[in-house]
Length: 354
Image (tube, rainbow, N blue to C red; front, side, top):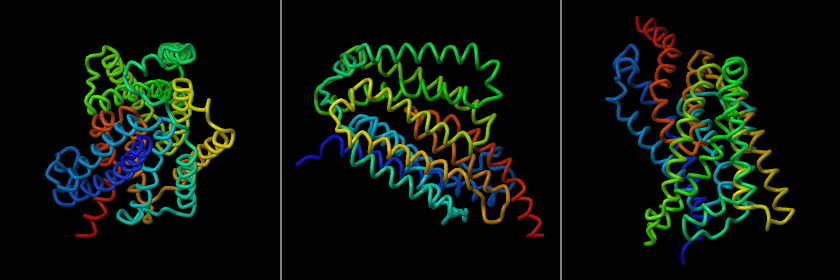
């Protein structure tokens, strides 16, 4: 007896959250080891490339993003996307053990809320139509409701990029976050299409003979490039503690709207399931805000900030349909942040050794 696609996707989504959350801890441990072993700046000397823990972290991250990609091929996006918050919980809990980061009462409450909200969503998430070919998804995408959404996303995004961002982009993080969230919701739907094409192809029905498969692939690549650009701008200009929860809420909300319009996810769901789903979303949103409201290392040094900036990007990348590409490109920037903020700690360790 085989598992239903929904449960296969659920297992992949939960595995992705665990792997991505764990990858941050392993990678950070590798960076710390490289800094202690070789001294100086791990990022500038590329000494981390000689560290087995760092490579283990990168491999774990890649596996997590692959699992996240496959999850969209099997389960509804309305189920997979909110479960991305699991990586926040995993990294926060593991950091308290392996990096000696203080989770604190607010962090513990936030982690509990994320878990509770995830369970509610798992129990009440609506099913999607049984897709047999990639052209079926394209037919859904050409329905009036979703076409109107696509047009609105294009108009609003272009307005924000060319009219609003040059003036307000450096003053308000909402500009860049809105661009990433709107474009990201479209990329998730495209990943759903391309992932489904791969899944059906693996069963023996080749979907790469259809032009729609390549339409979805090109859409994923195009949206990923836009997300990457403006996501990095938000990271450069604003606090990670502020960007993380707000981006999560905006991205998840936009993805839910896009998924409902594309597959009419709530059309056959009961009122109880609909209300329960939104309560689950709200619970996770509050939990993510709680987790990001209190982050510091027990020593009070800058290491806590370094962890947050390094880990925050990995967590948000898991929410993106093109998370793997974004995470790999951001690696240099993350290493630079780690080096800058861990420098005082290295100097302190050097002084103590003297």
